[in-house]
Amino acid sequence: MMNDLIDKFTRHFGGTPTAAAQAPGRLEILGNHTDYNEGFVLSCAVGQNTRVALRPIPGTVCRVKDFRDGAEMQFDLASPGAPPPRDGSRYVKGMALELAKRGHEVGAFECGLESSIPLSAGMSSSAALEIAAGLAMGVAFGIELDPVEWARAGQGVENDYLGLKSGLLDQFSSLFGRENSMILSDFRSVEVLRTVALPPGYAIVVINSMKKHNLVDSEYNTRRADCEAAARILSQLFPEVRTLRDVSLDELAAARANLDWREYRRAQHVVGEDTRVLAGVRLLEEGDVFSFGRQLFASHESSRMNFENSTPELDYLVELAKSTPGCLGARLSGGGFGGITIHLVEQDGAEEYAERVCAGYRKRTGITARSLVCKIGDGACAYTLE
Ligand code: GLA
Image 1 (cartoon, helix red, strand yellow):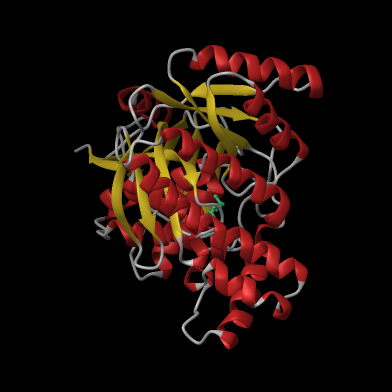
Image 2: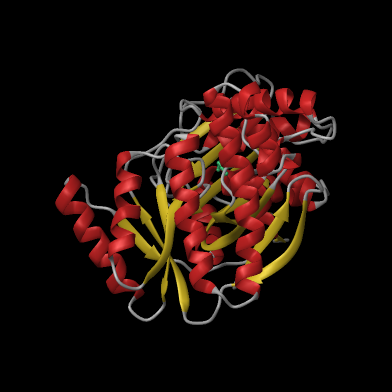
């Protein structure tokens, strides 16, 4: 696939690229909105990825060719300005500026990109593009960062350039994902604690509600602010509390009267999610995949009731999951407010399961959902082409 991109680049720009990189999308398996609360997430990289090929050119004007839709964009590194409109170049430009801000020299370049990650669905196509573009720039301009710093640079693009106060999960999973394994990550120490295998005979099916979300415009930032407000109040009651990661369900219950209803439910979700992630990993390690599945359903219910980041479409997909044979658990995955659901299913019959759920969804909503039986892929990598 990379060779195909290199050929297209060469034909389009009339010369060969000197650097290339690929970065996968990710699935949040369990642990919703826990990353920026310094908590735990079980996630994986997917088989779908974004590929970038790049070569330095003189001057300050960069050219970006998106081979997905043929769009050609350019931007000037000398005029940082507001982000370009909603196209791929905003992530590429954002990453170039973020690296410059961090003191690295990034010159002008031509770059071509391609991706198999569905857009705006909750599989982190934007983080994958930031990481692939960043790693390719790293090769082309001799910038060496450790993987956590690459993840932070990608997060910087979202937080500072695009205004989405997201955590590290997406970029981190894209970099640290391992083929055929989920990863349990701790976002306080910012490390992978261990890899966790999906038991043989089971698969993850992704079903896209096809209701697009746009996290920047959504309530993502206000949810984060609610969590931080709750943590501030809890830290006055329990001095050891810095973030919601430090709060137990018992402490939260004891503090009920000190929080307003909204803050209480937001905190309930995050503290509950941390508990479910750790319980879920233990259950998988004990071989109890059925109880693990129930944690997924519980997570969705908490999103719906406590965090209010579900939608009627996502709720309906999860309802269908409960009544369709072969499914052990399902939930919304990612920021929420639309996008995808993930379904833990028996591998034999996974395609048929997806068809049945999509048929039920179409009947009720009139929307044709897209589904895929997911392959757990490897983390990002970069190549020198000279
Ligand atoms: C989005 C953000 C992540 C994380 C998830 C919710 O994907 O980019 O940082 O907060 O939502 O868990």
